[in-house]
Amino acid sequence: MPAAPAAFLDPALLATIADLALLARTVVDGFMHGQHRSLRKGSSLDFAEHRSYQPGDDLRRIDWRVYGRTDRFYIKEYDADTNASVLFAVDTSGSMQYGSGAVTKFAYARMLVASLAWLSQGQGDRVGLATFTQELEEVIPPSVRHLQRLLYTLATTTAGGPSQLVASLAKIGLLSQRAGIIVLVTDCYEQPAALGRAVDALRMHGHDCIVFHVVDPAERDLPGDDDTTFEDAESGALLPLKPRVLREQYQALVTAHHAALQTRLAAAGADYVRLDTSEPLDRALHAYLDARLSRGRVR
Image (cartoon, rainbow, N blue to C red; front, side, top):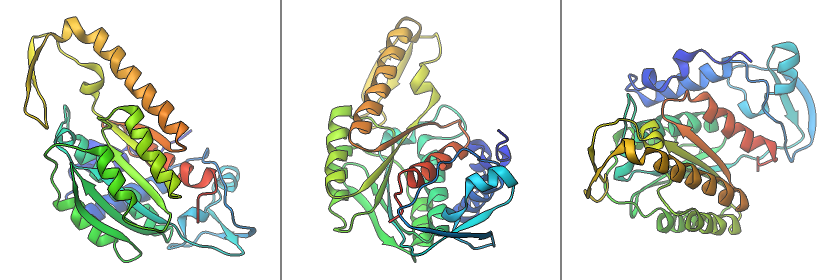
């Protein structure tokens, strides 16, 4: 399956774009011009007819099945429509500042959220933002007018300090009495059972949840053979290790943690997407749209 041009989606190249609005538009345009033929469809609304896509049309109405047959964009018209409220919850704790390559986890998260917000705005959704460490830091309530404010906040926010993921999620769940979509972007340094319970609570309040787990390759693989002293990004604690001795055991523990997260969040009814910071952003965009559309989540 042909993909979108790599230049539009490669995190290392995107990191050179200082303007988040330009970056988000570049990513979404690159994604939309790629050939993504496997998106599932679904809506709780009654389908009426197709018409040709016009610039500025609601992106969620593109019929990917018809595109797969014709290589042309057609819009699905419905008898009625309502838009979603999407709140992006972004972990800005110190561990998110880590990066073994060209892009830190926080830089990747910032590009990801900017792109998803741009895409959501194009669908006519209300978008908002909540950043958190051990407390909620910035809160922008979802609105059709808040995209530029969201992008500015992302651009001026830095990562640092300890994290309280579960406690922050509990507060995020109380921000609005109106059910919507909560998109959590974090490195998931939390016990799967505790995170699962926090997502359970969000689901009980009627929220749909999509969890993007951002992982740096070095965190997953523990590369290198020399004895190394590691520093905890949040507490500053120092830990001397021998990677060559511990690598196999470490990788097994990381794999088990990721599997437990996936299992527990699936049980909570959330969509769980693990993303490597070296991966192009089209996978995240594809997963986001798939989660939105496959189970008829457009409200």
